[in-house]
Image (cartoon, rainbow, N blue to C red; front, side, top):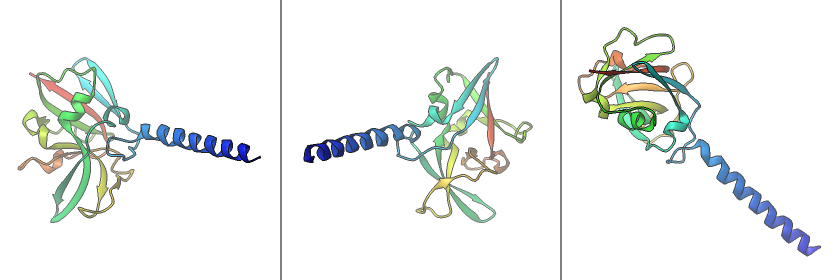
Length: 170
């Protein structure tokens, strides 16, 4: 009887380890679970899909955005890292990027120049304080937002509910 209990305990521990290991697939390298999303990426005649699976290995970066004398804190992925994560995309020669929201906002805005990419992010998480708990962006403004934090960049170029990224080349 004692052997049966020991074997059952060992099996339970093994199953728990397998389950915990399998759950890591929805998390990024920082251990944070990512929300499901799908963004259409258009590069000329080619179209790709960007999902949470494409970015789950990328480093999350913290950044702040000031708006109307308030500071908002986010975590997200840098645009150059995101573009490099799309295996089918040739990143050479990209000159600008336009983000379009699910309601079409952004379609008529100027694209973000390549020089701003290093200071631009696809935000996934939000916190009210710099050291606070970061949570998923709320549904009506998420799950993914584009922020360009480059000094002097137009604030109207920050896009909520990103549905499409349009690649421009010269």
